[in-house]
Image (cartoon, rainbow, N blue to C red; front, side, top):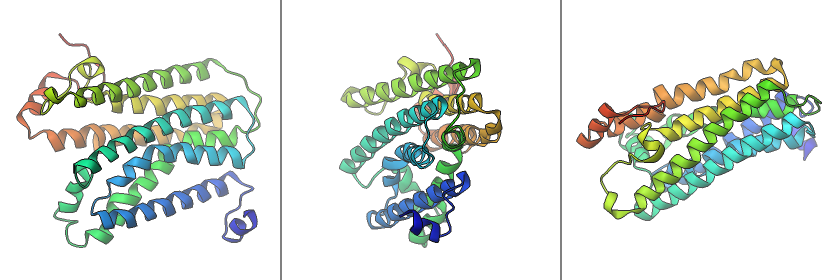
Length: 279
């Protein structure tokens, strides 16, 4: 297998070669999901695998560099906890959507978008699906390159690593609790048509996105705690923060639902991202 991959041009003796191999693997898998989504006329299926792909790429990088250091193992644990947890949650949510119809209504919006409606089957390849390939491979930079570059280091936990673990822990707490509280709220039929404002959802309209951002900043801090040479992987958490606050995430959700009177009132009385106590 190694000889075959080398023959395709992947230099598996370098970190860059392993990274680009993972990029090609994610690209191929997302392309497969794109084909399946065209038959379903909705590409929300990718949500069921999106989170897990972060964990899978990190595991591949870890295995292919024979990593055995403290920091590479710690980054593997952090990325796996986040990725597989998010993957399980999104897959379960997608299966719930499938029982009700074609999938996530936000993806139905792509199908009906004026610029995509004509020729959606091929435009979705470039506009809906493979931007997510790029996002996965950029946001995960601290985890992927961290486990590779720190594969044989002997550095123990330092103060920056401890801060990274703490930030990751806060983010994980918010993510897990927010998703759990939201699911409990939705399962109560009395809440149909309402918006949750209890628990961490009282502190922010999007505590799950806040948690996700904190998770990746925690992973980044842990990576540079092992080696400051990884400073450039800050591109990962920066892109993630931008995506979840200004482009997609909170901004997209508020635009998508802002026309509903009840949600418009919720916007006026609540914080959009950062947790904020209110009476």
